[in-house]
Length: 465
Ligand SMILES: Cc1ncc(COP(=O)(O)O)c(C=O)c1O
Image 1 (cartoon, rainbow, N blue to C red):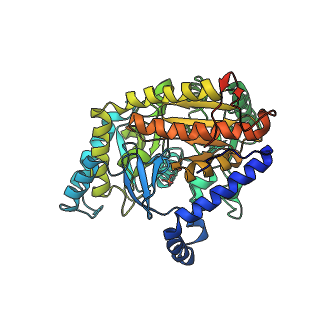
Image 2 (cartoon, helix red, strand yellow):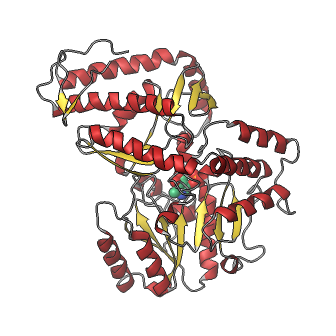
Image 3 (cartoon, rainbow, N blue to C red):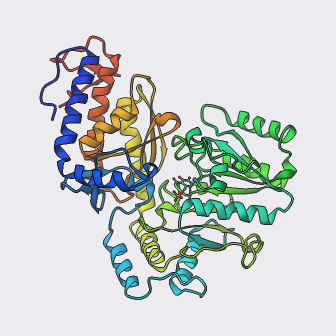
């Protein structure tokens, strides 16, 4: 696409490249515009992605748009496709189940749902042996919060974390603080939610000082039913907390008889190299919320607790029509088996550290690179390195990745756990090529000349072409 390097100043270079990218998007997506015109007429703006891409098909670690253009998927539908798109074993399980029973029939016991619940309990942290299945992560959080309220009468308050994302219904939104825009105009939310910082650019000690202060001033510990936290901050920036954070939180909860709700909606199902990220620090949740990667993209989620705790949510106190749909359950059982049988958690650990090493060795001076398994965050250290621009360029070159963090300040990589080495390599090559160029235009190399290769951070930079 960019056959020759523009021979002018960095800002002119950026403009030139942007113009070329816009042109290329338009010319590639002629077939898309009629779909987009149709979509824009009928969808709520809240459900209208700001993109020209219309996806028609997924296969493994690739997505294909309506024009047949292939994209490498480093987003996995926001961590919902741990074994890629349309895995043959998932497709087979779905087809078989569709021939058998489609409807949830939740007023009766349902075989597939029982089989899945047993499978889930076998992979959950040990203390969790009772489960409630939902349609989504948000519903899992709502259920977890309701269970906490039921189990702790007279303790209406929740504590959550700045940067945390738990969903957008009123309960889940009340404990979400990743972006003010999610909350704006929806007040009053649950007034019983209090926030402290996640250990991101503040120390764990400071976080616990904030908690102490909260208990002393505005929210006595005896008024709190649960602390809700993501084991890895997802939407809030792919932040891996220091090792002692979750165990200290567990200890604090024990001390004050507060329930600990771990939100593993994004970090669960093998993504970090363990079934659940809390296993890395052996932190025991009282309630575990899960969804996303559970069923290869079929809608399913849930929350788990000990039987004793779950018993507080008595008959009729909570419910769902579709939760635990048999097709979703069949897809989930197949997904979990593939992760187990193909040792994909080990693969996530291996690939995650390879990706981090590779990116750090070349770009560690320009980006902070962090992660656990295949949950990797990349945050520019220079203001001039713009995440949105990088991701737009990636898209136009056939790589799908997403942003996260305050004001979209980080790139998040969450490719399928079974991504083929060559596909991963191809995707990383695209990303590195863009990083190379962005680092140059960011003005780090002021003596940049289009005809010379340049050394940055001890590494010879490639030309962007
Ligand atoms: C950590 C976390 N919790 C909850 C949710 C909400 O899940 P859902 O979108 O399935 O309702 C998300 C979604 O991104 C999430 O990342």
